[in-house]
Structures are given as structure tokens and as C-alpha cells.
Image 1 (spheres, rainbow, N blue to C red):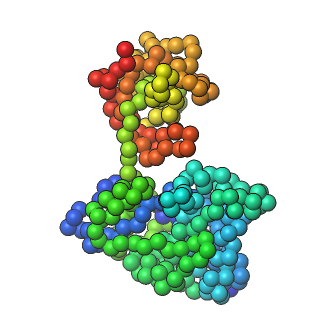
Image 2 (image 1 turned 45 degrees about the vertical axis):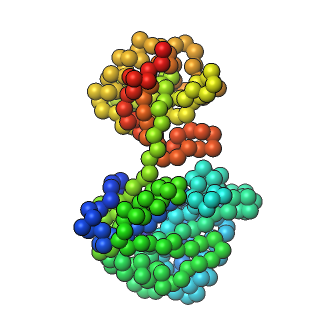
Image 3 (image 1 turned 180 degrees about the vertical axis):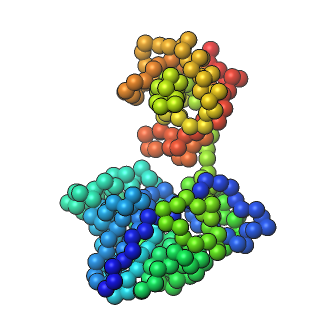
Length: 316
């Protein structure tokens, strides 16, 4: 059997829906919240799973080892995402986290497979038989992938919708899914690159939060807040919901530096104390609005981004 080429995965660029006039030139896939995984099937009865970084994660997911037999002696490289599904069938990154990092602990991975089963959702085909496919257009790669009819106990090929992007985006939002990935039908696969031919749209939620502290910035942000520590009122306590480090302009960071410097507290205002190293605590008066993707089971915000200060909601 020929040795398979190793591909760093192609990445999507954050953005918005393509123009309506170009809608029919794009395919739309549900955005998944898991661990990127390329599956290498040499056709010799083995399988190798690699993460986005290229690390071998085969041992972490024993339920995917049976992939080695699905194509017989046909060598292939498949691109997809390993996910753990919640009770509603949605990918849940927090559930998957207990499965990640077990590549060096196969016994623990075997125990976890029954508690939190993993599933590989396939969306691209990079090599088949003796043909490398990255230079072929997405539409052709997708057709070849679907022709393989890869459906099994722990893997499948979710549908891709051609055209109807606005409807697809609305449907994923209503279903509580993370978002949408838009892919140009004529685009080639560019390994290791973040390409404008793949566009990811994440559904963001918003929340009004109270600033209770900050973490110092580093590098060019030295002397400024690197992240704001925020919370929400829960009865008579301030409950920590996360650290927000993006979405600020340099001017806003400088403004927060001045505002927070005169509101320093010796004690943490959050209950319970999040126990953060290097944290500076402040009187919890400033209120702002953040955008975020989802919440963890502990109530923390995932991917929070600062949106705006809300002086109209400032605490007394």
C-alpha cells in the first residue's frame, strides 16, 4: 500500500452569509463544536486519527477504530470533527472535553467510551485510492465522500445543503446549534490555511454582565487590563461567569484601566471566589454587554466578546 500524505486541516474564516446573488455557488454545513480529526485509512486494516495540530489521537477514541475496515483495501484520508452529543443530539464541547487528552491513557479512554460516546462527523475527502484530492473542487470531493456512504455506529456524513443559506442559518439558530459553515462549491482544499472560501458563522447570544475585576495584559497590553472578570447577580450575590479578553479597542482598554484603577477592592466580590491568579478586584458597578456562543454546565460563558459598556445599567 502507498504511504498516505499527511494534511494539516483547512480552516474557516469568521464572516457572514455570502451575497444572495451568489447563494447557489455555496454549500452550507452545520457548524460542529468538537475536536477536528483527520482519519487516515491506509487500506491495510489500520486507522490513524490526527488532531488539528497533527497529534496522534487514535487511542483516545476506541469506538472509531472500526473505521479501519469500512473501505476494505481502498486507502483514504477523511476530514471531520469528533463530537459528543447531548440529550438533544447537539454537539457539546464540554462533554467531549472528558474524552480529549486520553490518547496516552487507552484504559481510561476505553472506560469513558461507554459513559460519553464520541462520534466522528465526516465532511471532506482528501485522498481516495491513489488520488490526492485537495486540488479538486469542494463539490467533487463532497460527491465522492457521499458516494462512500460512510454510516456506522460511531461515524456518519451529515448533509450539506447547496443554496438556501439564509434558511439554513435560521434553522440552525432555531435548533440551538452553534452555527453554520459556508463552503464555495468550486473551492479547492488548502491544507493548513484559513481560507475565505470556507466561512464560519457562529450564533452569538448576549448578556448584561457586571465587571468585578480584571487580569493584567501582557506584551503590548502591559499596564492595561488584558481581560475583564465579569459576573451576574444571583439573589444577593455576584456569580462569576467568565473572563472577557477580546472585543475592546485600545482606547476602550485605556478607559477601563482608568475606571478600574479608582475602584480597587482588597477582597473578591464574586461568590464563590473563582480563585484566579493575578486577579485585581474592583467595586462591581460597571455594567457591559457581552456576546457569547454557549454556556458551560457550570454557567461560564464560552467565547465571550465585549460588545459595549452599558452606563444606563450601572450599579449603585
